[in-house]
Length: 311
Image (cartoon, rainbow, N blue to C red; front, side, top):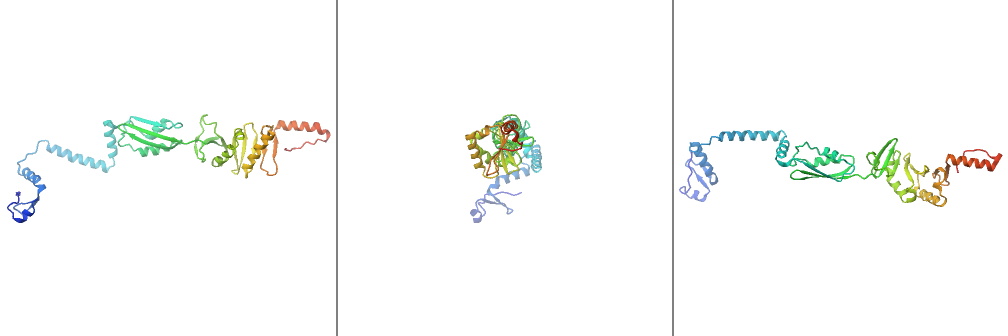
């Protein structure tokens, strides 16, 4: 046991160190430890008796400390936080979704991943955002927590540019050619139809060229990519315009001019072949070909010789 003194009778050295006390045995105790030391001395000597519940409280403290330690080390702290905060008023009970047109709210709810007792406190908004962005139509998303129990989800969806056909498969594509999703329903049937391998990636620039001639563009039913080198135009009256691989702009200008002057695209023909720079090859429809043959027979009589030809 040791005693504490004020240090007044310990000479000049103690006076110079007023914050220290020296026990008779030579133990120096800092001023801020004197009161705890006195209390410890009283407990040790039996002057202070612990209350009956002190042992239980101490045991509970020790056990609780081990439980917390095990929870942290085992990686279960987030689950504990989720469970406790969810049952104290922080369980997510409302999700506000905006910006979705093609994406169903059910799909978004599924990506958010709630189980009925998910706490807003421990909810990982960034992880949920990444899951939502994985949906086919979602370009970007923002997930915000609004305390105490609301989650706000804002999505920006991709913009379909055209319908791309490969065989019997129809898909919606973006302007850069990336596939969004298979075509379902009739909501996007007014979009340009692009046909053929390689057509998706090169359609944007070509469709823009045709769009610069509104009268022609309004009559186009499909843009057909041939061997990933050139384009055919399928018009709404069944006529096919075969464009050259090079100088497409000049060919489109010539085509529009011929149609304005002669009504070329409204005639009874099957195709207009513009792949040859020095001539235009027109193929008649079967009915027009028969009518032409009959007329030639009438005009030439015995001199008529049937032959396959295009004009």
